[in-house]
Length: 219
Image (cartoon, rainbow, N blue to C red; front, side, top):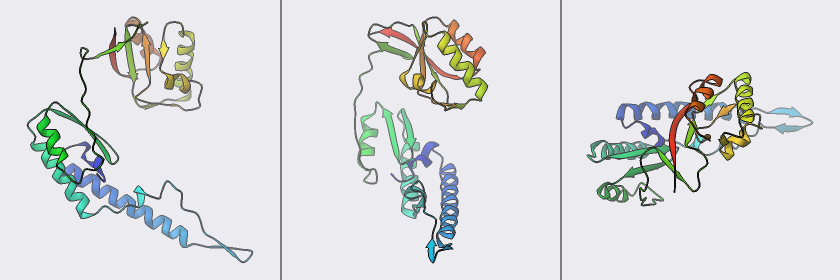
């Protein structure tokens, strides 16, 4: 559904605020690039017009219609009025509903404005806040927060991982990150380790970097 991420918070005033912000931002963007596109620079009897970057084309130019706003509020009404437990996650124009209620699934299935619907059933076979691995070599897994590090913070963090490489396992994405120039950590970065004292050591290097810790159990 178009603009579905406006439902990050299921509140009608919040939705209206986000939609108005997006309308204003896109109108300003269209005006700015329209002005640049109509400007010309004479050069050897040629006219050069600035190209519009590909990142601007598409969603940034898309008009938010009254129909889109109505669809968002109708979906919000349905979810707000629901009496069953669910978790709702959004990203741009996509959304994911996690629930044990077939009635809620059926309600969502009946909404024609929701396209490309898929349904999956997951069997829960492990305790909460655990990760099941075959032949685990560590006892805990901690995921990082989204954060931007300074040059010094990244250097210290990289040195810590290199010095403790025999005791800590880095996720594949984190292992690539430590040799890349990027300084922003992602929320899918994780480390596996044995013993909770490693979190204390990590906090001394960079405080408040861990968002979630799970216990690793054997499959």
